[in-house]
Length: 135
Image (cartoon, rainbow, N blue to C red):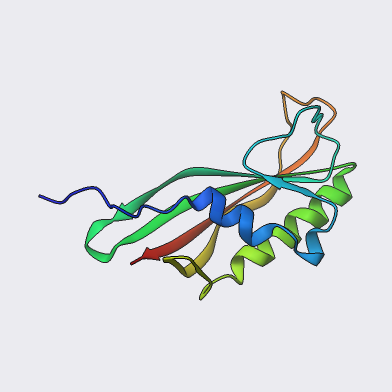
């Protein structure tokens, strides 16, 4: 019988760290949830885990990371979505504490999707599957 991993990584925090302070994302909010006062028209990348699985024998987490990317207009949101996904698709080999990203692959997107919470939003979604090994 296998036990739960003792060092299961917080992949949302890992992705926020990877995307924060990147020159190609300058001026964008990067977080796990929208900040107070958010209306969907600000430049923002909201990071959420949308599934995936832990592979116990390998000590590898295979999360599906969804990026909800917003901008003041559709073009700006598209440019920001492509910049954020490019950072993640190049992150294989990155070491963060006791976690190593061993692979990154696009699972979906980016695609335009209306936002029913923020009706003025310009939003693109994309999903990246990461492989994160822990020691």
